[in-house]
Length: 178
Image (cartoon, rainbow, N blue to C red; front, side, top):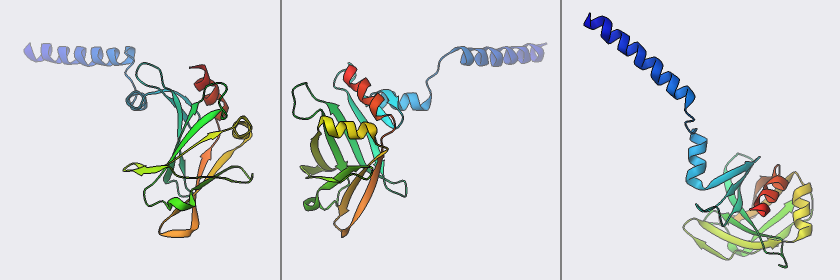
């Protein structure tokens, strides 16, 4: 009798747990990772990240080289109306980047623009600059932004990182609405 009762309780417990799991909205591993990183929305490859209170939001994506290696992290923040630039950009390149060469950025086949590095810390080397309304329009119309950096070990050979622009327009609209 005890064996039958124990088996019945096991079966009941299994089905109760399975039913609970189906009815509950357990977060996925992606949702947990997003919560930990402040990700409040995704638009293709772009993430919208905000502080815990929903302020100080920015767009984020990582540009990769042709082998799929993460090379440059890119954050963009909407700037106040009346600023000379529409969007503020911070790009972080790995340590051992050849700083005097700066980085270059272009959309698709357009001519590149050069930007200097401001400083380095243990996370990497930082380049900060603004994008004008016209440059933002190029990002909206483009397919990829190409970022060329130089390593101190190969100063004559650029490392190209590609930043897909799919979702850029929606991400920027989302960012500006926050």
